[in-house]
Amino acid sequence: MTAKIINGKEISEKILNEIKIKVENLDIKPTLAVISVGNNSASEIYVRNKENRAKEVGFNSIVKKLPEETSKDELLSTIEKLNQNPDINGILLQLPLPKHLNEKDFLDKISPIKDVDGFNTYNAGKLFKGETPYAIPCTPKGILKIFEEEKIELEGKTITVIGRSNIVGKPLSALLTMKNATVILAHSKTKNLKELSKISDIVIAAVGKSGFLKEDMIKEGAIVIDVGINRDNDGKITGDVDFDTIVKKASFITPVPKGVGPLTIAMLISNTYELYKIQKGLE
Ligand code: GUN
Image (tube, rainbow, N blue to C red):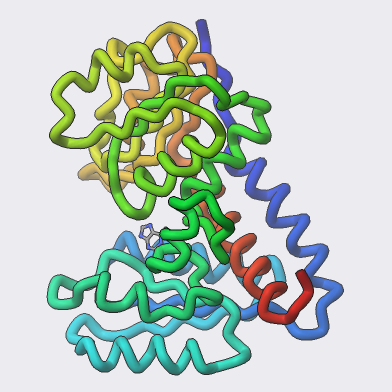
């Protein structure tokens, strides 16, 4: 079997275009604020992409770039000012933070109604209870969008998610469970990963290790979603999936780049727009 290569870029362009058209009719444009602390080179690229996409759909985009040595109080005060500013609709604190700052001290300080990432306890709690949060984390939401666009039914499917991060694995496992899938949330201490992934209809790799998921870890015709964004020594971007071999065995596969990544940004834009509407009472 040769897998269909899912074009995440195309799906994301469609979503962004729809939002752009809606924004053209708005007198006051949605505003996204991104806080970036320190000099993480990967984060700098992500933040630039987020800023560019926001501007392309007609949003105002603000980037608060803070130095590596920013103190806890300085970062808290930056967040609070953005919370209080009625012109700001979405606030994103780019992760990871420098080592001396602990993300849990800050994520809960972002007002839940401006929390575009859906990372604070209020929104994460709502998600896990099956209630409606203000925002759902962007990468898991983007992966669900891929399934929707490709008409991939989730009910009754066995899905292995590899990686239990708060950004991807945990919220994704909650969302897939709500879609009536049977979710195996595997991680670095999982002993029999290959046995689990091999019985799965869908395997989602979010481990952060280049080429981690090998062809012998999936069954024939499995659907494979690659969340990895790794940079090899030459600066080339690679995923968590051994693409060249798995593409010959899976039924669907997302490439890296142009797979899940563009959907993550499209969902960030979509979340910002949704928060704007809630704040303006347009919902
Ligand atoms: N770092 C890597 N992915 C993300 C994300 O989705 N949101 C934030 N805030 N930081 C990240």
